[in-house]
Image 1 (cartoon, rainbow, N blue to C red):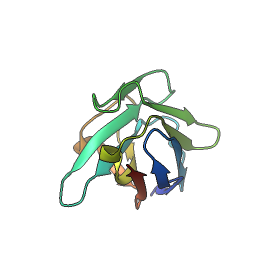
Image 2: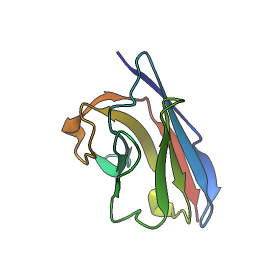
Image 3: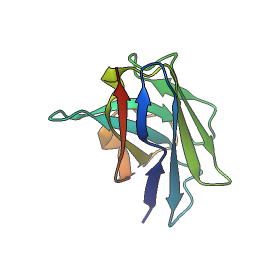
Image 4: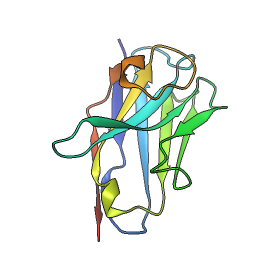
Length: 124
């Protein structure tokens, strides 16, 4: 079993930045891809970003490309989502997840473990 704890969410103004962290415990995830998804009120969860097992490959949703950066520190079993130039349409609950594979994955079915989510609110 893997437990994931997200942190770093909060309220920020348009154009501001936030850094989300996701710490994994229970077992090492250094050989597994990790990702972030987000969910808007009343909508399905959508893909945001994913990173492969060693951090060498990342993939982003078009809506965040150039603004968000995903990185990982396998020594700390932690991934970081740096979010810059935030927009009101980025307001959502952000979920961290661990994949069952080592390569990048943008679909929910590739992920086994999920965090509880952290709220990000961007005011206009």
